[in-house]
Length: 174
Image 1 (cartoon, rainbow, N blue to C red):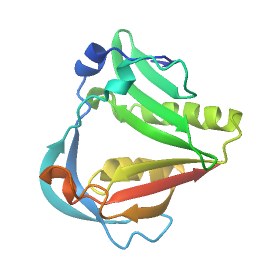
Image 2: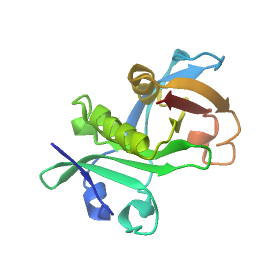
Image 3: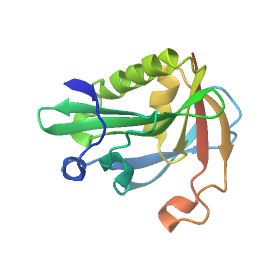
């Protein structure tokens, strides 16, 4: 498995993989501690997001970091990060294909993002995920991120599948 910095990921490479995730648990309030929030079981469902078109377009003028984890011709995972106005790196997107989960790819992508952030003298990494993505929350907590805040209304105007989710903001201080 190779981790490469790329300027774009072809849409057909992303479409060939399953980046959906299962929801078996949901994080619940209070969201006021540094660690993983409490979770409750929910009715099993699968969530999939569409492909972010910006991943497929070269962006030579920006300072973004776009990483692709490649297994031959397969894109096993990717990470998109940008420097933010507040001295943090922002992980704008991270996904691992279903068939490559639990192989260490997420950790390797995050390690690269940490190195990139440090090289830019950014003091922290920030990311956001949903209260329904408990597996991602567990990964972030295990990696060393702390829960920094939440927004109950961020998704309130979106599809019914998402509108009840709470946005959770995680920080990794470098």
